[in-house]
Image (tube, rainbow, N blue to C red):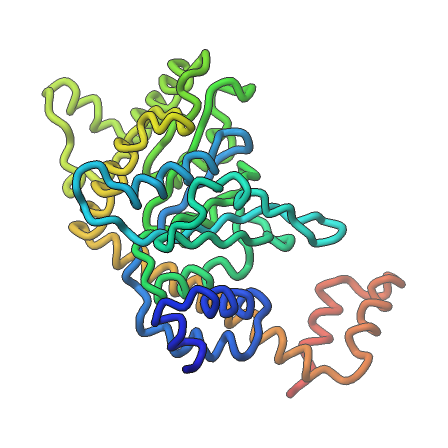
Length: 330
């Protein structure tokens, strides 16, 4: 049985081995991904992002537990978690501590946790995160939770990857609302105010609500009429949900909001649009890498180092040096 077949059959060791090869850009990993691609496109990709200290890992832990142990008699869902941890800028290493914080989930065969180092990439994700989600999707996981690094203002790549993006806030972090400074609020499909038992939670919720109302003036009309706006007509308006993750307070409301958002995505055609945009982004990223690698391989020996020396001597500008390098024909 080859690696792709083993993953499809539920072999967790084969899955872990394949994910490692995908992260390391191994040719065998690429071949297995090619074989698995036809089985992708089924999972609900849920991104969880926000500033450090908001309790993202605790929230992800409780969401996974809720999907595995549904209170309403639903069938338990198979859940995969991708936890991206920041890498050291000096050694490239990472603590990968999210796996430690999710010990409640250990031993459950319906849950698979993969910690990833960001390896210097910005935007909150690792370079191979999209490929890892594809493998987990093909492996039959119905819910894939992707927790970003937690760098805060630059974490917008998750919106290109996920169907549903949760932006997590918490009171007492020094600002009324951390995310508003960089527009991360704009990527939110659901706003979660975690650590809702802390002082200042009402102020945080009020700040969020004011920003939502500014972005969606139709809310005021709906409030005056006493009717909730229809998402399929007016578009999706992010709900604000208060949680206390360690006690599982508010988790069921978050699960309900995620389900409602999926209904909206499928009913409005947004699910297909987001899938198309994500695949286009991945295609362009791989194309850029391949073209760059092919171009570098075709340069005469020493040409690139000579170009750097030219720059160091300030004999040419960066643009002039690049134009000269691009003259080489392959």
